[in-house]
Image 1 (tube, rainbow, N blue to C red):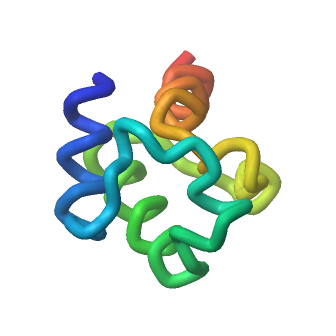
Image 2: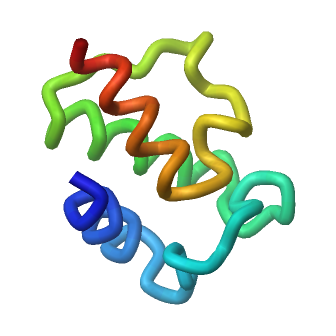
Length: 75
């Protein structure tokens, strides 16, 4: 799943090193438009529904956090 998440992220922002960046939101690497695109792609690719309450910076600061969010929503 991590590979699939990385592929989605790299399609949206090919200029970002998602493997090594640990503060994607806190450091302003991703903006609100990026998050909207990411949420849409995750919803479509993983058959989940990311709600407004899930749109916390902690859920999108790292690839690992995004994977955990997807796994939680798939349960």
